[in-house]
Length: 178
Image (cartoon, rainbow, N blue to C red; front, side, top):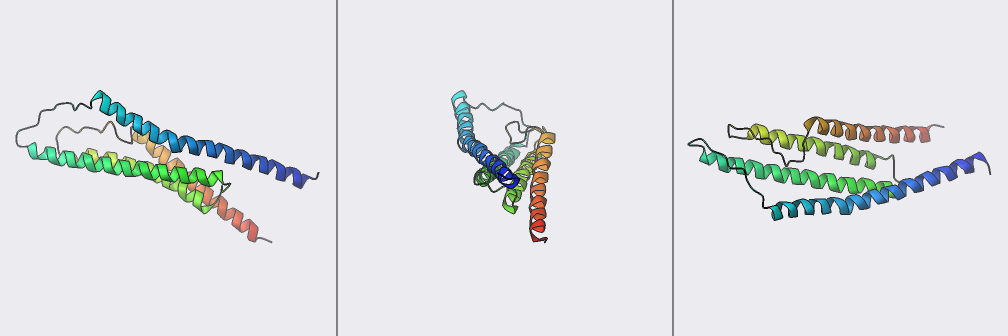
């Protein structure tokens, strides 16, 4: 057995291991994430979601409608961002599962996951700054609990996407080099 066959067997073993682990992560994400969301909804319904009463200044009753509309839009935006994150993450793990690693498509998926973190931050800031009531309430149930963490996570995934894209371009250049 020469060294090329040994390297090929090692690479095939590693690729098979990547495919296997990616499949398990995809299955966990595919069934675990919806299950977690269902449990959260059931918990909210069973415990009876209670709104904290607050006093409104006289003449600001109309702002309650605006506040409710803003929170509803924020909820829809956050839900859409979560769906984009979920779908893109599943797509990324399916690509890894099939052995597609350093390609433009995987780079695009990683960047999209990073940008969904930034979208969550924008949703949080939008609700905070567009809140017409004098008591600025930070949405506690939002997709972004800690903005600094989400900025880091978003930047990290965007960087990984850029890195995968550059690795793919290097590989293409090396294949073209004689």
